[in-house]
Length: 358
Image 1 (cartoon, rainbow, N blue to C red):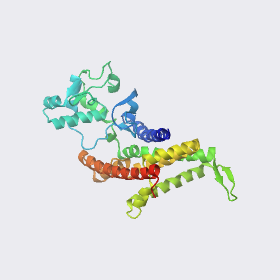
Image 2: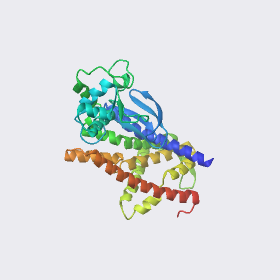
Image 3: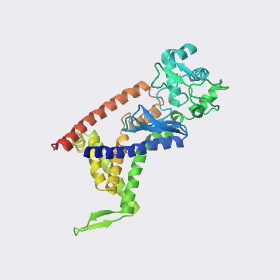
Image 4: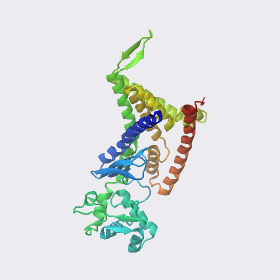
C-alpha cells in the first residue's frame, strides 16, 4: 500500500509540474500566434484526448513527463519543394512519399523532408501508427481552416495562390518569429516553474503562515509580508542554482550527485510530505518545481537551455544549425542524463530500500 501511495503522490507532483512547465511554452507560443498541435502529459506514444481550438490535449500511455508540440521548431533550412508538395497532397488527399517524389521529379529524401516539414507545421497530417508506408493526408476542415466540410484525407479544390497560403502557414511557425520571441517561448517553461514556486512561497508564508521555534524554544505561528516571502523564494532559487552549478566543478560534482535524488527519492519524499499535510506537500512541490526549472535551463540539448544556446549561436553566426548536428548534440545530452539518472537511481535504491547509503 505504501508503494502505491508513493507512486500516486509522485505522479501528482510530476503531473502538476509538467502541466505547469509545458503550459508556459504553450501560452507563450499561442501569445505570439504560433500554432501548437499537441499538449500531452506523458511520453510520445499512444494517447487519448480531445481537440480544442486546433490543439489536441490529452494523456499518453506512459504518463511520465509531457510535451507541447510547438510548430516550426525543426532545425535546418526550409525545403524548397513545399509549394509543389502541398498542392499535390491537396489534390490527392492521401499520398505516399514515393508518389510525391515521382510527381515532382525529386529524390525520396527531398520528398520526405518537404512532407515532414509540412506535417511539423500542422499544415498536413503525418503518418498514423497503422500506416504501412510513409503516408500523409490533408487535415479535417476545422484543422486546415480553409472552409468546407472535409474529413482528414479528403481531396481539396486547388489553391488559387499556393505561395500566399504557404506564407500564411509560415507566419504561424516558431521559426518565423524574431529572435527574442523564440527565446521567450523556450524560457517560458522554466520561468513558469519558478513563478509557481514563488507563488507557493507567498501563499504559505504570507497568507497561511508557518510554525517556527522562537529563541525561548516555543512554537509560534508566524506570517510575513509578501515581499519577504518572495525574497525567501528567491533565496531558495539561488541555493538551487549554486547546487546545480557545482555539477560542473570536478571537485564538488560527486558530492552534489550524492546529495541529489531520482524519481524514486521524489516518490518517497512526496509521500512523507503529503502525510505531513497540504502545506508541506505544497512546499515540497514548489521545491521540486524550482529544481525542474533550473535543470531545464542547463545549456545541454535537448533541454530548453540547450535550445536557447543554439538560438544564440545561430544569432551570432547568422546561420542555422542543421538537424543532424542538433540530433547528435541531443543524443550526447540524453546519454549524460541517462548516466546521471542511473547513478542517482542506484543511490536512492540503496538509501531508501536497503538503508545502507552513507
